[in-house]
Length: 327
Ligand SMILES: C[S@@+](CC[C@H](N)C(=O)[O-])C[C@H]1O[C@@H](n2cnc3c(N)ncnc32)[C@H](O)[C@@H]1O
Image (cartoon, rainbow, N blue to C red):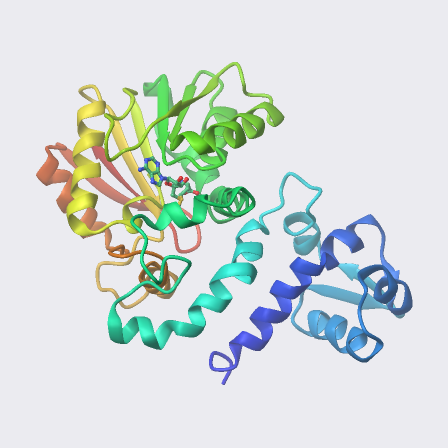
């Protein structure tokens, strides 16, 4: 029942992020009447909505006053650099609606998002609207932050001096890698429309002297040369043939000894434990014409086929792992 009616809790949290509950309470704790007025809640809904958030563990109520928990204050206050609610904003605006058509996707194998009625690339429709583009790129920061920090700490970075993150979105991964490893020079490679958003983000993080944007398409251009090439949430967007082409291009861009690091919700080899990874693959069914998630063994196989001499899969945080291929 918890899973079957899980959308009740999910939508309550998504609406709380949309309305700005956690951002408001991060300024100061408030009583019911004040928060109801500040957020424009109807008197019929306010107490039930806020107390549901208390019961779900996202707020605390002490003597009639509502407070964020330490976690919601850190992760869901829009004004903090630690904010990761972008993915929840996108889930609220887009995915929640599109997942309503999951059964249709299961029967037809067709995507159910803005490109449902045709459209060449899953990114074309998304990028046609600048506000949607910005929301999507920010959302990626939310889903990748913890994993990017783990890679920034775990890879043998001292052996390398340059890194290029392919399909870098807003740029958070390359920001985390270079912030944690001050000797590194970083690049972000993505479609040209992403450039200004990437550059603003890198500038805001004080890394403009060490991190540059390289515009291009990984379908028509070679990848920039670097000692480490990373791809986060890229391979799962594309079909098998496109995946193998991207792995080959990464191999070509690396020097001997260079490392290719693939990170996302890599599915366990038995395909029975990483539920988030399996659901992410269904999300690719909703979002893309041919994308799917895959196991560490699948990815290591594509790397070996492209010529990588050693490969390994290493767990990072939560459902995410990295697959590393050394040339
Ligand atoms: C799912 S997002 C992943 C973002 C980021 N790497 C992460 O893990 O958070 C996919 C990224 O691939 C980029 N992309 C899509 N098509 C591309 C292409 N043909 N060439 C380069 N980048 C592309 C998108 O703009 C987007 O930033």
